[in-house]
Length: 305
Image 1 (spheres, rainbow, N blue to C red):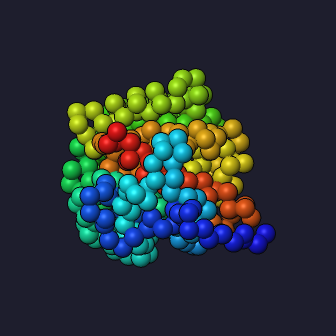
Image 2: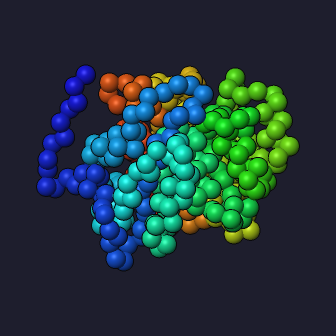
């Protein structure tokens, strides 16, 4: 299927125009970082640049939030920090650290575009540095990500071993038939709070997010949020190799992203596990990721309300 051209309209501001090389004074600042990890994926995937595809997909959306009646183009500053070169390669983590260290300290949110879930380990370690034990983590993920080894299935285990406190880790949307009993015990023994997909749907999504924030952000902790798009239903995200039927809807995920980023304790959010080469011809996976970037920015805007 050929791409449909985006119509130019001076009264319809494209969300792609939010991307800038420098901050706008007087506005909340968000920083965008591309972190295209893929080399250690459990499911072989292409090296195609997902962050670039998400940036391009922003052009499919406007900057106007109808529900909040605000125009992000007038309210938010989004600085594009580019992509980390070869984050999986030799000295890749050092390059990630260098990019994060160069971000304006006034940034209230770092938006990380993966890459597979290895990006979560790299980005959170780089951002927290030696203070990792003082942070909390929330994941939206069908998987526990506590596998042995070093892969996109192990970032939570690696972070726990590096000093992240398990009692300040919350995993939302964990699915049936996507994990194992030994790894479930590992998460439980580490003190991780796991909220299954069924439990998540039995209560208000916003209340579940608030509960997660209270646990992860307890005692004034900064919070990192990982959004693994394979938490969504496979029909919604065909570009996610490990997505399965029965996952969250696009709307459920959209609501939770806006809710979680409305909290000032959230300092970073990533969107991971997309393989552009596997996406549907209508680019539905990448377009959802781009929409979630805008939802995250809308959440930041709500902090000042």
